[in-house]
Image (cartoon, rainbow, N blue to C red; front, side, top):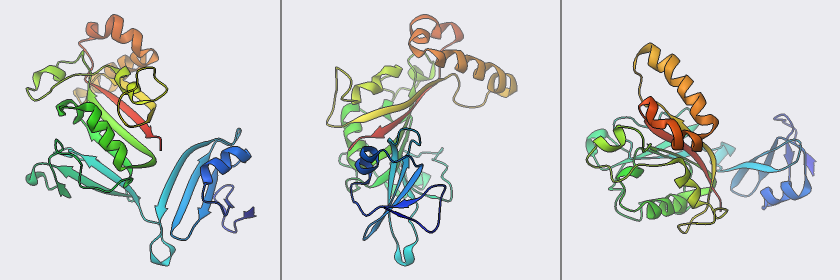
Amino acid sequence: MEKASRQVRQVYVLDDNSYASTVADAGVCIEICIFFEAEKVCLVQVEAKRGLCIMAFTYKKERGGRIMKTRVLDLGCGTFPYQGNEDEEVVSVDLRPEVEPAVVHNLFIFPYPFEDSSFDVIYASHIMEHMKDNIQFMEEIYRISKPNAKVIIRVPHFSGRSAWCDPTHLRAYSYYQFYYYSRDNRDHYGNCEFKVKKVELRYIRFAHGFFVSKILSPMINYFANLNIEVCEKLWCYYVGGFSEIYVEMQAIK
């Protein structure tokens, strides 16, 4: 194992294609590993104390050795598209040409016009409740996700008024639904494998003045997310319901 000349905290160069298992098995206590291959640069973030691989991203190299930006897919971008940063290449998809998406496509039609394992991040904000088949939707997200891709999903919570007032909504959600796409769950659905990394109830989706946005909503969110199951069972309706569920998942491939 050769130590790299340019360091990012602790950086090592390893000549091995199976970088994630190598780091985990060896128990190397470092934070960042860089792996050079013929056409790829693989960055692996490792838990320093136990040497466990907790996140991995793969980038194709451009000519001159520059690393391509993280590819983000914004499904159903609408009028509130994903706000990317300078390190991200955002591909937006929507049925309506007037919102100027990068790709015009009806999300009810499968497969989507992308190759397998195409994206590092997939963002779907208030799209899933419109889908006729949620399992097929998650399978398609899985197909176009790169290994360990980050999947961000926002959906209406069952207790919120906005979940039921839109005539195109087919369902509302409880926080636990997203655990059914993990094989660790006793009842697993779909030809896919996701690990839930984060799930939150959110009292409001948009700003509603200083008091609600800055004081009331953060306070309610704090207590709700201490134990979401208790909140859903006992008191979510007493505060007028929650607007949405925010979920972050990891595609396991």
